[in-house]
Amino acid sequence: MGNREIFDQVSDMEKQIGELYEQLGDLKGKLSDLLEENHRLAVENHNLRHHLEDHTEAISEKTATKGSGSSKGSHPGEGYDNLARLYEEGFHICNLEFGSPRRNEDCIFCLDFFDKTK
Figure 1: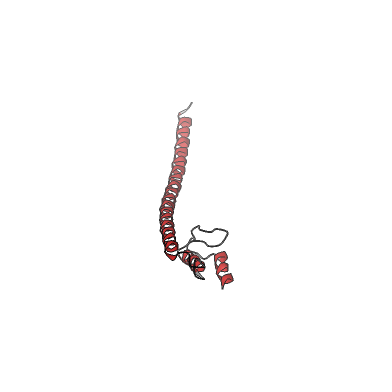
Figure 2: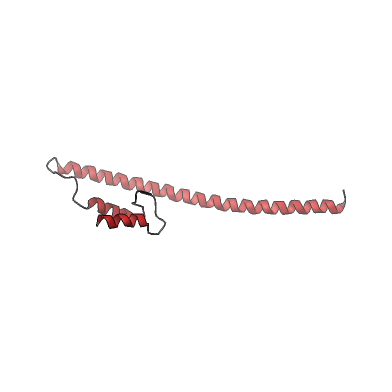
């Protein structure tokens, strides 16, 4: 094997190592994005569970203090107001993606729901 062939093989290996290094950097960036999203979703999940617990406790206290004399559990429009609040907080209220976060954009299905209720 000549010196030129050895030099060519080393050059090819060097090029392959550079490509692998570039792929490794891309994978590292994707992994970083996934870890950030996972952390964001874990925090959001924790906050939603906390909010749900608070809301459930408030409803149970409200129901306990009302007694058995009331004929209806809530005043008209309370459900609509809760859905509107959820939508404003950045969550879908449509039946396609209910409860999933919106990406700072309006959803035509959610907006259609508001049109139907008016």
